[in-house]
Length: 141
Image (cartoon, rainbow, N blue to C red; front, side, top):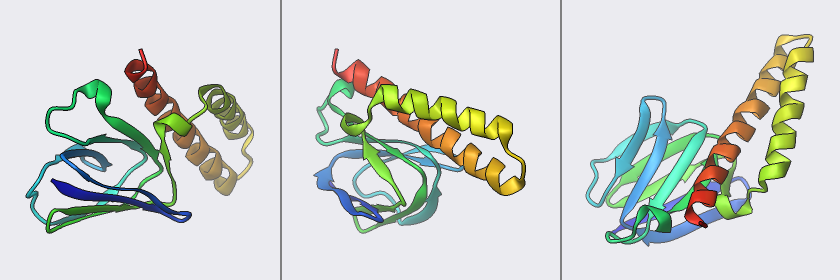
Protein backbone atom coordinates (compact mmCIF):
# COMPACT_ATOMS: atom_id res chain seq x y z
CA UNK A 1 0.00 0.00 0.00
CA UNK A 2 0.99 3.63 -0.58
CA UNK A 3 0.46 6.50 1.82
CA UNK A 4 -1.15 9.22 -0.32
CA UNK A 5 -1.69 12.84 0.66
CA UNK A 6 -3.21 15.74 -1.19
CA UNK A 7 -2.19 18.95 0.56
CA UNK A 8 -3.64 22.31 -0.49
CA UNK A 9 -3.43 25.88 0.76
CA UNK A 10 -6.51 25.17 2.88
CA UNK A 11 -5.04 22.02 4.45
CA UNK A 12 -4.97 18.25 3.92
CA UNK A 13 -7.71 17.21 1.47
CA UNK A 14 -6.91 13.50 1.46
CA UNK A 15 -4.61 11.28 3.52
CA UNK A 16 -5.04 7.52 3.31
CA UNK A 17 -3.34 4.26 2.45
CA UNK A 18 -4.18 3.36 -1.17
CA UNK A 19 -3.22 0.83 -3.83
CA UNK A 20 -3.02 2.97 -6.99
CA UNK A 21 -2.83 6.67 -7.86
CA UNK A 22 -3.09 8.30 -11.28
CA UNK A 23 -1.69 11.83 -11.49
CA UNK A 24 -1.58 14.44 -14.28
CA UNK A 25 1.97 15.47 -15.28
CA UNK A 26 3.35 17.55 -18.16
CA UNK A 27 4.18 14.27 -19.94
CA UNK A 28 0.70 12.79 -19.44
CA UNK A 29 -1.10 10.77 -16.79
CA UNK A 30 1.19 8.53 -14.68
CA UNK A 31 0.18 5.52 -12.62
CA UNK A 32 1.76 4.95 -9.23
CA UNK A 33 1.70 1.60 -7.46
CA UNK A 34 3.45 0.34 -4.30
CA UNK A 35 7.25 0.53 -4.42
CA UNK A 36 7.32 3.20 -7.15
CA UNK A 37 10.73 4.73 -7.74
CA UNK A 38 11.45 8.11 -6.09
CA UNK A 39 10.27 11.03 -8.20
CA UNK A 40 9.65 14.76 -8.03
CA UNK A 41 7.50 16.17 -10.82
CA UNK A 42 5.12 18.93 -11.67
CA UNK A 43 1.42 18.19 -11.63
CA UNK A 44 -0.64 19.93 -14.28
CA UNK A 45 -4.33 20.81 -14.09
CA UNK A 46 -6.23 17.56 -14.43
CA UNK A 47 -7.71 14.45 -12.89
CA UNK A 48 -6.35 12.62 -9.85
CA UNK A 49 -7.73 9.08 -9.61
CA UNK A 50 -7.32 6.91 -6.51
CA UNK A 51 -7.93 3.16 -6.19
CA UNK A 52 -7.99 2.32 -2.50
CA UNK A 53 -7.77 -1.47 -2.81
CA UNK A 54 -6.26 -3.69 -5.46
CA UNK A 55 -9.58 -5.37 -6.25
CA UNK A 56 -11.63 -2.15 -6.44
CA UNK A 57 -13.32 -1.55 -9.77
CA UNK A 58 -13.11 1.66 -11.77
CA UNK A 59 -16.54 2.59 -10.39
CA UNK A 60 -15.11 2.46 -6.85
CA UNK A 61 -12.24 4.84 -7.54
CA UNK A 62 -12.20 8.33 -6.03
CA UNK A 63 -11.57 11.36 -8.24
CA UNK A 64 -10.24 14.84 -7.60
CA UNK A 65 -9.82 17.88 -9.84
CA UNK A 66 -6.54 19.70 -9.35
CA UNK A 67 -5.13 22.91 -10.71
CA UNK A 68 -1.63 21.45 -10.70
CA UNK A 69 1.19 21.56 -8.20
CA UNK A 70 4.18 19.45 -7.21
CA UNK A 71 4.33 15.66 -6.85
CA UNK A 72 6.78 13.96 -4.50
CA UNK A 73 7.19 10.17 -4.38
CA UNK A 74 9.53 8.69 -1.79
CA UNK A 75 9.49 5.49 0.32
CA UNK A 76 5.93 4.42 -0.56
CA UNK A 77 4.64 7.90 0.26
CA UNK A 78 3.11 10.12 -2.42
CA UNK A 79 2.34 13.77 -1.77
CA UNK A 80 0.83 16.27 -4.11
CA UNK A 81 1.10 19.89 -3.05
CA UNK A 82 -1.47 21.97 -4.90
CA UNK A 83 -3.16 25.33 -4.55
CA UNK A 84 -6.47 23.56 -4.98
CA UNK A 85 -7.87 20.04 -5.22
CA UNK A 86 -11.61 19.34 -5.23
CA UNK A 87 -13.19 15.95 -4.60
CA UNK A 88 -15.56 14.88 -7.38
CA UNK A 89 -18.44 14.73 -4.90
CA UNK A 90 -17.92 18.43 -4.10
CA UNK A 91 -18.16 19.62 -7.71
CA UNK A 92 -21.46 21.21 -8.67
CA UNK A 93 -21.66 20.61 -12.41
CA UNK A 94 -24.14 23.40 -13.24
CA UNK A 95 -22.06 25.98 -11.35
CA UNK A 96 -18.94 24.83 -13.19
CA UNK A 97 -20.70 25.12 -16.56
CA UNK A 98 -21.79 28.69 -15.74
CA UNK A 99 -18.29 29.57 -14.53
CA UNK A 100 -16.80 28.14 -17.74
CA UNK A 101 -19.10 30.27 -19.90
CA UNK A 102 -18.19 33.37 -17.85
CA UNK A 103 -14.47 32.58 -18.17
CA UNK A 104 -14.80 32.13 -21.95
CA UNK A 105 -16.54 35.50 -22.14
CA UNK A 106 -13.80 37.10 -20.05
CA UNK A 107 -11.22 35.59 -22.38
CA UNK A 108 -12.95 37.09 -25.44
CA UNK A 109 -13.07 40.50 -23.77
CA UNK A 110 -9.57 40.50 -22.30
CA UNK A 111 -7.71 43.70 -23.06
CA UNK A 112 -4.24 42.76 -21.80
CA UNK A 113 -2.02 39.71 -21.20
CA UNK A 114 -2.76 39.55 -17.47
CA UNK A 115 -6.53 39.44 -18.08
CA UNK A 116 -6.05 36.90 -20.85
CA UNK A 117 -3.92 34.65 -18.62
CA UNK A 118 -6.42 34.91 -15.75
CA UNK A 119 -9.32 34.01 -18.02
CA UNK A 120 -7.40 31.07 -19.52
CA UNK A 121 -6.60 29.76 -16.03
CA UNK A 122 -10.31 29.91 -15.15
CA UNK A 123 -11.24 28.13 -18.39
CA UNK A 124 -8.73 25.38 -17.62
CA UNK A 125 -9.94 25.09 -14.02
CA UNK A 126 -13.61 24.73 -14.96
CA UNK A 127 -12.86 22.35 -17.85
CA UNK A 128 -11.02 20.04 -15.43
CA UNK A 129 -13.88 20.21 -12.94
CA UNK A 130 -16.41 19.31 -15.64
CA UNK A 131 -14.24 16.40 -16.75
CA UNK A 132 -14.04 15.10 -13.17
CA UNK A 133 -17.80 15.55 -12.79
CA UNK A 134 -18.26 13.16 -15.75
CA UNK A 135 -16.32 10.50 -13.84
CA UNK A 136 -18.51 11.13 -10.81
CA UNK A 137 -21.66 10.70 -12.92
CA UNK A 138 -20.34 7.46 -14.40
CA UNK A 139 -19.58 6.14 -10.92
CA UNK A 140 -23.00 7.05 -9.55
CA UNK A 141 -24.98 5.20 -12.24
